[in-house]
Length: 79
Image (cartoon, rainbow, N blue to C red; front, side):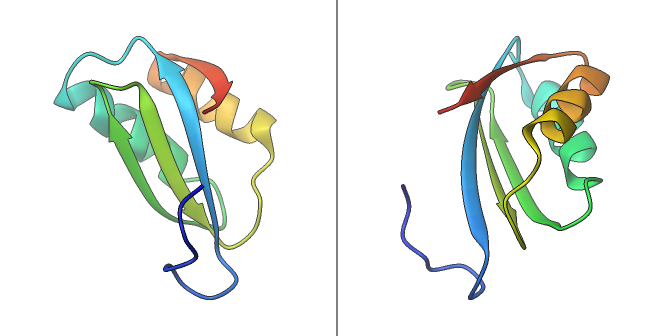
């Protein structure tokens, strides 16, 4: 896990998402996840399938799954 260099009290979680293949995919996934309340930042990387989310508190995985589904991809789970 990454160090706590973000905002104090924030939670950094890395998820694995299947199906991302380009920058547009990264943008779609990032856009949907960023709409979840409490999310501060999202960084999706198509090459690795990893999506790093910094949030005020731990997120409900069902909410993340729904956001990824809405973007047209599949949440595999936490990396």
